[in-house]
Length: 169
Image 1 (tube, rainbow, N blue to C red):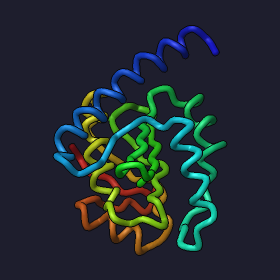
Image 2 (image 1 turned 90 degrees about the vertical axis):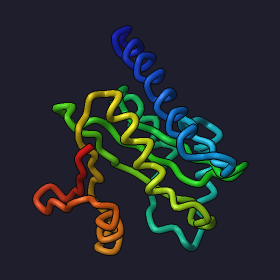
Image 3 (image 1 turned 45 degrees about the vertical axis):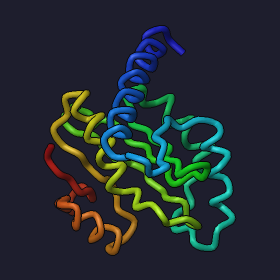
Protein backbone atom coordinates (compact mmCIF):
# COMPACT_ATOMS: atom_id res chain seq x y z
CA UNK A 1 0.00 0.00 0.00
CA UNK A 2 1.38 3.41 -0.93
CA UNK A 3 2.04 6.03 1.73
CA UNK A 4 -0.56 8.33 0.14
CA UNK A 5 -3.15 5.56 0.33
CA UNK A 6 -2.33 4.95 4.00
CA UNK A 7 -2.56 8.69 4.69
CA UNK A 8 -5.97 8.87 2.99
CA UNK A 9 -7.17 5.84 4.96
CA UNK A 10 -6.13 7.44 8.26
CA UNK A 11 -7.59 10.85 7.37
CA UNK A 12 -10.97 9.47 6.31
CA UNK A 13 -11.05 7.02 9.20
CA UNK A 14 -11.10 10.00 11.57
CA UNK A 15 -13.96 11.60 9.61
CA UNK A 16 -15.91 8.29 9.55
CA UNK A 17 -15.53 7.78 13.30
CA UNK A 18 -16.55 11.37 14.02
CA UNK A 19 -19.63 11.14 11.78
CA UNK A 20 -20.72 7.91 13.46
CA UNK A 21 -20.17 9.35 16.95
CA UNK A 22 -22.16 12.50 16.09
CA UNK A 23 -25.04 10.47 14.65
CA UNK A 24 -25.01 8.04 17.56
CA UNK A 25 -25.22 10.94 20.03
CA UNK A 26 -28.13 12.49 18.10
CA UNK A 27 -30.21 9.33 17.66
CA UNK A 28 -29.59 6.85 20.42
CA UNK A 29 -30.60 8.05 23.85
CA UNK A 30 -30.77 4.77 25.81
CA UNK A 31 -31.64 2.63 22.78
CA UNK A 32 -28.81 0.12 23.11
CA UNK A 33 -27.58 0.99 19.60
CA UNK A 34 -23.87 1.33 18.92
CA UNK A 35 -22.40 2.79 15.74
CA UNK A 36 -19.03 1.27 14.86
CA UNK A 37 -16.76 0.84 11.91
CA UNK A 38 -16.73 -2.59 10.35
CA UNK A 39 -14.17 -4.79 12.09
CA UNK A 40 -13.37 -8.49 12.42
CA UNK A 41 -15.99 -8.94 15.14
CA UNK A 42 -18.70 -7.54 12.83
CA UNK A 43 -17.52 -9.60 9.87
CA UNK A 44 -17.52 -12.77 11.96
CA UNK A 45 -21.01 -11.98 13.26
CA UNK A 46 -22.25 -11.48 9.69
CA UNK A 47 -21.15 -15.02 8.82
CA UNK A 48 -24.11 -16.32 10.85
CA UNK A 49 -26.46 -14.54 8.44
CA UNK A 50 -25.50 -16.98 5.67
CA UNK A 51 -27.29 -19.73 7.60
CA UNK A 52 -30.58 -17.86 7.80
CA UNK A 53 -33.57 -18.91 5.71
CA UNK A 54 -34.76 -15.28 5.89
CA UNK A 55 -31.71 -13.77 4.19
CA UNK A 56 -32.58 -11.76 1.07
CA UNK A 57 -29.08 -11.22 -0.34
CA UNK A 58 -26.00 -13.36 -0.59
CA UNK A 59 -23.17 -10.85 -0.34
CA UNK A 60 -19.97 -12.15 1.21
CA UNK A 61 -19.15 -9.46 3.75
CA UNK A 62 -16.02 -11.23 4.98
CA UNK A 63 -14.29 -11.20 1.58
CA UNK A 64 -16.11 -8.27 -0.05
CA UNK A 65 -15.31 -5.78 2.68
CA UNK A 66 -11.53 -6.11 2.30
CA UNK A 67 -11.67 -5.40 -1.42
CA UNK A 68 -14.05 -2.47 -0.97
CA UNK A 69 -11.94 -1.04 1.86
CA UNK A 70 -8.78 -1.16 -0.21
CA UNK A 71 -10.34 0.39 -3.32
CA UNK A 72 -12.18 3.21 -1.56
CA UNK A 73 -10.35 4.93 1.31
CA UNK A 74 -13.09 7.62 1.38
CA UNK A 75 -15.79 4.98 1.87
CA UNK A 76 -18.69 5.14 4.27
CA UNK A 77 -19.01 2.10 6.51
CA UNK A 78 -21.23 1.22 9.43
CA UNK A 79 -21.61 -1.77 11.68
CA UNK A 80 -24.77 -1.09 13.66
CA UNK A 81 -25.07 -3.10 16.85
CA UNK A 82 -28.08 -3.55 19.10
CA UNK A 83 -26.61 -4.44 22.46
CA UNK A 84 -24.42 -7.46 21.60
CA UNK A 85 -26.13 -8.39 18.32
CA UNK A 86 -25.08 -7.13 14.90
CA UNK A 87 -28.12 -5.32 13.48
CA UNK A 88 -26.70 -4.30 10.08
CA UNK A 89 -23.69 -3.67 7.90
CA UNK A 90 -23.41 -0.89 5.35
CA UNK A 91 -20.84 0.16 2.74
CA UNK A 92 -20.88 3.12 0.43
CA UNK A 93 -18.56 5.57 -1.22
CA UNK A 94 -18.51 9.07 -2.66
CA UNK A 95 -19.53 9.49 -6.28
CA UNK A 96 -16.65 10.05 -8.68
CA UNK A 97 -17.22 13.80 -8.75
CA UNK A 98 -17.62 13.93 -4.96
CA UNK A 99 -21.03 15.61 -5.06
CA UNK A 100 -22.86 12.61 -3.63
CA UNK A 101 -22.42 9.71 -1.26
CA UNK A 102 -23.55 6.31 -2.52
CA UNK A 103 -25.01 3.50 -0.46
CA UNK A 104 -23.75 0.42 -2.27
CA UNK A 105 -24.45 -2.38 0.22
CA UNK A 106 -26.77 -2.56 3.21
CA UNK A 107 -27.94 -5.66 4.97
CA UNK A 108 -29.89 -6.03 8.16
CA UNK A 109 -29.69 -9.03 10.42
CA UNK A 110 -32.21 -11.38 8.77
CA UNK A 111 -33.17 -13.02 12.06
CA UNK A 112 -33.56 -9.85 14.10
CA UNK A 113 -35.59 -7.08 12.44
CA UNK A 114 -36.15 -5.24 15.73
CA UNK A 115 -34.31 -2.15 14.44
CA UNK A 116 -35.34 -0.33 11.27
CA UNK A 117 -31.79 0.13 10.06
CA UNK A 118 -32.34 2.10 6.84
CA UNK A 119 -33.38 5.47 8.34
CA UNK A 120 -30.61 5.21 10.93
CA UNK A 121 -28.08 4.44 8.23
CA UNK A 122 -29.27 7.35 6.10
CA UNK A 123 -28.82 9.72 9.04
CA UNK A 124 -25.24 8.52 9.54
CA UNK A 125 -24.57 8.77 5.79
CA UNK A 126 -25.91 12.33 5.73
CA UNK A 127 -23.54 13.34 8.52
CA UNK A 128 -20.57 11.79 6.71
CA UNK A 129 -21.64 13.25 3.34
CA UNK A 130 -21.85 16.74 4.81
CA UNK A 131 -18.37 16.34 6.29
CA UNK A 132 -17.12 15.50 2.78
CA UNK A 133 -18.98 18.42 1.19
CA UNK A 134 -21.40 16.17 -0.71
CA UNK A 135 -24.89 17.49 -1.44
CA UNK A 136 -26.68 14.27 -2.38
CA UNK A 137 -27.26 10.76 -1.03
CA UNK A 138 -27.77 7.88 -3.43
CA UNK A 139 -28.99 4.33 -2.90
CA UNK A 140 -27.59 2.21 -5.69
CA UNK A 141 -29.26 -0.75 -7.40
CA UNK A 142 -32.27 -1.59 -5.22
CA UNK A 143 -32.72 -5.36 -5.31
CA UNK A 144 -36.41 -5.33 -6.28
CA UNK A 145 -39.45 -3.08 -6.65
CA UNK A 146 -40.59 -3.61 -3.06
CA UNK A 147 -37.25 -2.36 -1.77
CA UNK A 148 -37.28 0.54 -4.24
CA UNK A 149 -40.76 1.57 -3.06
CA UNK A 150 -39.63 1.28 0.57
CA UNK A 151 -36.77 3.71 -0.11
CA UNK A 152 -39.16 6.09 -1.89
CA UNK A 153 -41.17 6.35 1.35
CA UNK A 154 -38.17 8.22 2.77
CA UNK A 155 -38.35 10.86 0.05
CA UNK A 156 -35.82 9.34 -2.32
CA UNK A 157 -36.45 9.68 -6.06
CA UNK A 158 -35.76 6.81 -8.44
CA UNK A 159 -33.60 7.34 -11.54
CA UNK A 160 -34.21 4.39 -13.88
CA UNK A 161 -31.33 5.15 -16.25
CA UNK A 162 -28.77 4.78 -13.45
CA UNK A 163 -30.80 2.35 -11.31
CA UNK A 164 -30.46 4.40 -8.15
CA UNK A 165 -32.50 6.59 -5.83
CA UNK A 166 -31.36 9.94 -4.53
CA UNK A 167 -32.16 12.79 -2.20
CA UNK A 168 -30.55 16.19 -1.80
CA UNK A 169 -29.07 17.27 1.51
